[in-house]
Image (cartoon, rainbow over all chains, first blue to last red):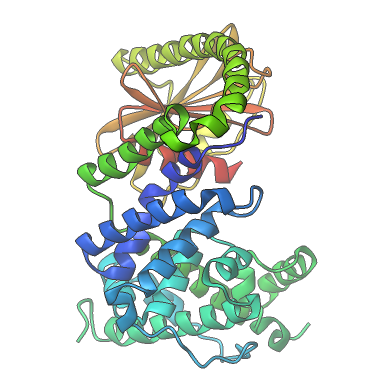
Length: 173
Length: 254
């Protein structure tokens, strides 16, 4: 079988990468610039890409690193003081399932926008891109244990943004 | 096992990241424990909400044309043109490559011709089904109705993806034939556009080609791949990006 070309591998990721870029930058023009830069860098670096390793994680890593060194990216802080295996033990949250189910798509989108970038990006990679912990670790350049604890904290933060609005009626307070 | 042990593993379970043995043990625990069950429900609900909310932005057609068009142009350019200072160094290997590519090309063009035949036949099936007064023989948006309908009608079975949270809807299905082989023809809808999904047993290239990337045939976009001995074709007049989304959903369900 012939080796896949850059075009074969990269074109199917176009829509997802744009969505991710748009979420990171919160701006259409910046998102387009970021995707364009990502494709240009990836094309140049394609010869150094190891066949058989994860191409998708590689592309996302390029996009994310480009974002972090961009003007908007420099303003966001990625540093989180996190313990690796932060224990995730909590009380059961029985009634919340029903409440969360009532959150509209717009409410969740608004809450995601308000989350700090490290939380927003890890939730997108996990839920939207359906990446495995291993892939997320590769993309973000962190350990798998850190992926788990950061995901836990990101979900907690999202829940804490959503619940008061759901308690306060359909439009929040 | 007590809940405390499980509680810190619920996230990994919902994410499908728990090792199989542990996941099985937790699955057995859930029906006996209302607390953990409710907790999992909340996590799954949250995952679905974020997945649906996160698919929010689509690139503009102009931007897609710019990037994807550039890539296609660049890959054509790297195939044909080399910077002039390199030509002496490259002349000998280039000649060898040229000779090999001549041989490959004649093989590939034969392959291409066969592929084009299959593609235009599938495009015909797609169009004639839509033009028919009864495009589908089983009408249902429920994959659990459509899949069993095919039982006994075609010599294989397949899985259909959950579409909740996506813009796709299932319209229904019918039995179809390609190169004397019976297969399933499913019709999906996306914003008034119909997309056909064809599933045939894979006969090792007899009915199709090795290519699996998005292709354009008679102005329809197509994507095809082989999975678990079945050959899948997705055909429609929607953009390659949307087509790919449906193809990915199908792929991940098999």
